Length: 195
Length: 248
Image (tube, rainbow over all chains, first blue to last red; front, side, top):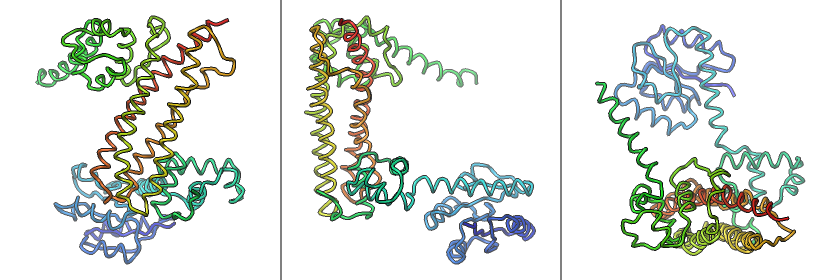
């Protein structure tokens, strides 16, 4: 997936420089540039952005609330600070990461790639893949590994590795616990169960 | 500057030293319990009666017919997270009281802790209505079966009778204590599942207060069961192996 980037920065020199570097990256497109964060939420929705680079000094005193709210409205959003002045690093903790005004081009690129990557693995850690959901549903319905392997046309070994990942992601090990999980998440309904 | 920086550290160290020193046959039982409340639950399992006044561990153990060394070793397992007794330490302990202790622990889990959990859980099942109630109920039944199967059938009806036999110098050919190793992980797993379902996955509006309470109980029980497993793996199994080896 390509990253859709919004730059929120008051200085035209800095914004232009950032845009030039980001557009040069294979996986990134700058989809919008704004000078103030007032309509940032709206812009993110309209342009379907997943990455924001913002000057922390623009957010003022209530920066934490602002970022918290932004995170709630856009759960997969990555927010990176562009640090242009002397700044207490504690202020930067709510961001996914930061780049600094005197970072080299290659450093900026590697940092952005790294932030995007960590976010991707984090997301991967909690969400079940479609294949895993198929296995989970089969397990919840009371099928044995061999039956699941035959049904899905995969090896038992693959079924077991899916089951390991399901347990790692959900924190649930027992079959009866997985059944509860599947029902609570509407992956199966009561009629699917063999009593 | 120097003092204010280092004084708290010194004090903390001193307290830890007192605590470590305190776990000996000369320390007062009441003081041990004040130092770690988890030790309180060990008393009924050893058959130690309350009303022990200011007597020390050795005196209390003697009055109640309990091996002081066994009592102190198990206390150590309950107060020290990383402690696992080694072979040399076990050799010097009179382990005649181990089986009665384990049986009393099992009785406590079966007759008191699990029914208590069940009471909580039944209220949550009831409040979950027709949509989630039946499957939660099914989940609980499976869990209960696992507990009963493990403790009652496996330990009380297979393993313990086997050990009693060994102690009498007899041996059944069909069983070895090695099979028992790591058998108790299942109960822990289902307790973990139960916690995850209660805290992470059940809709938030279903009896939140009750769910927090039961979760605290589960954490305490989990901790207890973990230490119980240490006793079984690091005292019971080596002990039984030595009995097996002693037979011709």
